[in-house]
Structure formats: structure tokens, C-alpha cells
Amino acid sequence: MRKHAGFFLNMAVCKQFCYSIEKRKRVNKVIGILYIAHGSKKADKNQAVHSFVKAFEAQHPEFLHALGFLEATTPDPTAAGDSLIAQGVSEVIVVPLLLFSAMHAQEDIPQFMATLQQKYPDILFKQTATLGADPATIQVAANRAADSQMEVEQFLLFVHGSKSYPTPEMTVITQKLAEKLGKPVSYAFIYGEPQLISKVEQLMRSTSRIGIIPYFLFDGILVRKWQQELNARLPKLKIVWTHSLQLDEQLFTAIENNLQEVMRS
Image (tube, rainbow, N blue to C red; front, side):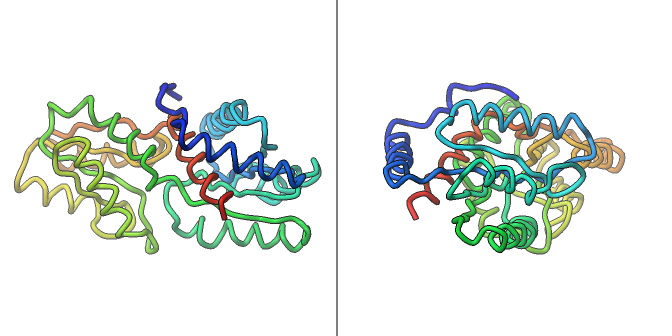
């Protein structure tokens, strides 16, 4: 994880965020944050998520914190929620450590929340938005691309994708990136349309210098697989790959923004 001074909240946001917390303290609410991550078969990836959450926790001792994983490792979200409630929280805010509100955020996480709500009917449960569309997250991607700006003519945002990915949200993200980078930015998916290979082939008609920004929390197996795939299929094309978001601590601001939004409701 890279540290940047930019992850601190600006004063206006901090004032509102702290006010929301103090308001809850006055009515004797103990708030717990339940982070839910995807989970990986790679132990180092799961450890990176633990470290990220611990670093955020250190900046926010006013909350109780727990982390659960959807698959591949433990604890699952129900067990993590149990641990929070055992510590005496009266409200649980669920924070998906995911970029987009696809199946996991729309279906899997609400199912875990429903299970917890049934077990603990007196506890208030809320869920924040995902991280991908927040300005702080977009800024991290822009920072990754900035180092390659002189080498490329167009950027392509490379996203996991699914049948339920929010296409309008993708358009907004690429527009904001284009404004920051001063160059055209489009997007492509592994799953869904437009697909990565076909989009790169389309871009090749107008440029031979493409920068690909992996919009993933990690430089993981999928990113490496598609790097190799593109190099094998299009060996003469000059492709510059930036790093992924790499759980940059600037993402703390995105989490804080989402928490503030939920706490205002």
C-alpha cells in the first residue's frame, strides 16, 4: 500500500463527518463497521486487506471494526458481524470493499445482512455504496496513469465486469479520468461488453500507443492473465500497463465519504 497525504479528509468533510459521529454518541449509540471483502486463495492478498482495514481502524478509533470475506477465507461476514455485536454495538454499518455494485453488493451482501438482522432484530444495519465511483478512487487511478501519460495516446480502463455492472457509472468514471489526464479514456470488461480484446482491436485503428489502467484493488491473477493474453495476441502493439489501485490509502477518503453519506440518513 502506498501512503499519500491526499487520503486525509478536507476540513469541510471532516467537520460534517465528526458531527455525525458526535450526534450518535449523544444518543448512546455504539457504531460498528463491518468491512466485507471478496476474499482470495492467495494468503498475501487477504493479509493486504487486513492491513488496509487495520490502518483505517487506527485513524478511526471512534468505531468498532470487523472484517469478513465473501469466499476463499475466513471469517465470513456473518461471523465477523457476530464478533461486532458481541462487543456491544447498537448499529452496524456494512462497508463493501468492492469497486462496483454488481452481484456481490446487490445480492450476496444483503443476504448476509438479512441473516444478521434476523439474529439481532434490535440492531440497526446499513450498507454504504461501493468505492469505484468515488472521486478519491478515480484520483488513485489517475495517479497511476499519470506516470505513463507521455507514452500513450489513449487510455483504456480495464474492469472485471458482469451482467449487472452499471454502464452509466462507467461512463462517468471514464469522463472524469479523461478530464484529469487530458486524453481520451474508454473502458472494457473481462465479462460483459465491450470486451477487452475487441476494444483494444478497435482502438488500434486510430492509435498504436494504448495505456491500460486495471481498475482492480490488486494486481492479481486476472490482471496478469490478460496482460499475457494481449501480449500474445497483439505482439506488435505498444501497450503500457499501469498498476492497479493496490489498496492505496487514498481509498480511505472514499470509505469516509460513503460512511458520511450513510450516517446522514
